[in-house]
Amino acid sequence: MNNSKRKTVIAGNWKMNMTPNEGVAFVNELKSLVKDKNNCEIVICVPDVDIPTVSEALKGSNIKLGAQNAHWELKGAFTGETSVNMLKEYNVGYVIIGHSERRQFFGEINNSVNMRLKTIIESGLKAIVCVGELITERELGITTEIVSLQTKVALHDITAEQMKNVIIAYEPVWAIGTGKTATADEADRVNGIIRNVISDLYGENTAESTTIQYGGSMNAANAVELLSKVNVDGGLIGGASLKALDFTAIVDAAQ
Ligand code: PGA
Image 1 (cartoon, rainbow, N blue to C red):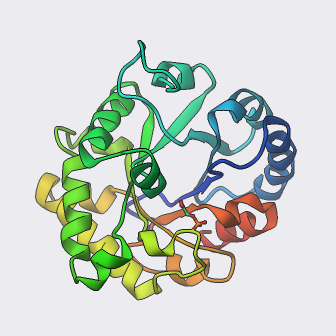
Image 2: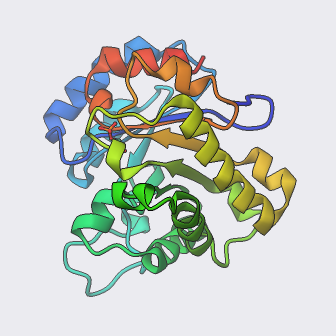
Image 3: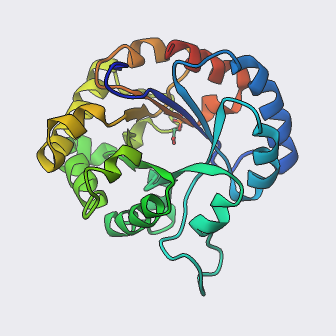
């Protein structure tokens, strides 16, 4: 991470875990554990149905609230979807989009990630855009091509000014929930490739000030090494974000 140029963001992704009440109990524990930790932005991205209770529980804390997806339209006949305006009423500040689980199980494609991103940014929220290669793509030696393509399409028609509200999370799909982490050098290398894509699109200044996280089995044991890398500006954390002490240890690693 390079704190002089960009913000370090440690974001938890609860996925489909924790009921509204469990979420509140967890947040009450986490709030006191991280209350004096101000060197990074701390975010938890929770299931939509948890948002009202967790939002209330987070009031007055240094933890920001995020959602795990949002639709590109503001309202209408989209059964099962959630709009940015619905999220904003509960002080949601961040939205994850393009997560590999959405791509794998729910038909998310690069173009729909771009549509969501435009709406999220235009509504004043911040987005965490996930990119990352499958194991088969890594074995074919096309990781650079895959993450570059995903990044470019996601950012289509996004301006340099709007990039201030965009975070990219590099999440190699083979590392998510598997206990297999990319080595710190490999995470740094691919994050650097993404930064070069941003530089080509927007110039050096925007590239240097964009937060690029790593995600994929980040935990209390490997966070210090991953976060010590110059191109790794934070983490998107699944499994380890469900344990308050582990998540706090990752926040500590970013301090
Ligand atoms: P994991 O998940 O930390 O459990 O690998 C990361 C993610 O999917 O964002």
